[in-house]
Each structure stands twice: as structure tokens, then as C-alpha cells.
Image (cartoon, helix red, strand yellow):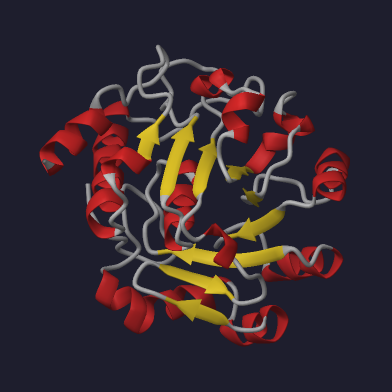
Length: 265
């Protein structure tokens, strides 16, 4: 399993799109051009900023996230532990994709949603949610969603932005949302609902099958790399980064977070 992406137009088992040096010097813009076209991003999103770990458009001010707490919610079985009291204990709540199909989340204020190409942007259920709760919507690169679709959506819903994280991996949107929150300056980032595929339970889409590349041991390796990256590179403190579903019966990642934190000692 490689640490870095080998080819810009191929996926696979890797954890980073590029090294920090390559990312900032050329690779972030290379990805932007390949998937979006930087000149269009300049015109439509007011430009963009590149750091060692993130490319993000300039049209939305995320300074309010700095030094705040963020909860990231995924669709894994451990998210059944969610409650209003839990969500209210955080300053911001991030989630992803078909969250609006979950009975609890469909009636809950979410601050930021990362939307992948599997989501129909014209879904009445999705449009009803964003009209009522006005979350910020984030788009990353996609092999299936065109730049024109993103631009059309932004015209009708300006609270949209484009981002690319140097970190990627097959852990999915929960991990990248954690990275995004930390890159925005969040001092505390917890997550729930990133459990692997031990049980075929998907809290956003009933009956959704595990991905064809499902490999528990490789997922565990990537989880360890993700945790180490958050702690060592993005320098979040151990007490302020937690997997709230780590010991849920459906999680394949039980004990890994504690192992990484103990190694950091």
C-alpha cells in the first residue's frame, strides 16, 4: 500500500495526494486544473488559497471555526449514538453526502456538508433541507461530477465552496472533514460514524453495500496513518481528537486511536 497517489486520474490505496512540499509548490494547482480549471475557480469563487495541506476557495470566510469545537458525523452504525445533547455540545457540526435521508439529521441544523458525486443535487429532499437550514456545501474533485454542475449549483446556492485536501485515503469523507476542520483552525475535532464495514448498516442509505475494495486490514492501516497525521502533522492535541464510536460493536477501528495516542507519549 502506497503512502502517496501515483497517478492523478487513478484512485487506490494511498493516504496522501502528494508530499507537503509537492502539494504547495505544484500538485494542488495541478489537481485543481485537472478536475476544475483554475481560471474558472478564480472567476466564480473569488480565487483560492493553498497551504501545506489544503486548497480552498476564497468565497466563504471560515475564520469563525478557529479555536472552536467540531463534530464530524458519518453514516456508520456508531452514529446511532447521536443525540441532540451531543450535537449541542459542539460549536460546529460537519457531515456528508446523504445525511438528509437520516431521520434524525434531516431535522437537525448542520453547519457544513461535504457532497460527493453520488448525491443528486436536484433531489427535492436535499433541496428542502438546504432551503430550511442553509448549511455551507463543500465540493472536492470528482471523476463523475462536472465543473458545470458545481457552477450551476453555486449560482442557485452561493453558500458553496471547493476544496482539495492533501490527505485523501479510502477512509472517506469523515476523515477528510476532520482534516478540513483542523485546517480551518478548529481546536477540537471529534468524529462518529466512521466504523468500517463490519456490519452492513448504513444510517444515511438503507441497504447500501460496502465498496468493492473493502479490505479491513488496509482500512485499519489507513486509520492509523490518519490519526498520526492529525496528531503529528496537523498538531491537534490528544485530548481534542476523539473517535466517539471507537468502542462501538460495529467498529473495526477499536483500540487504534488509543494505540496511536500512547505511541505519541
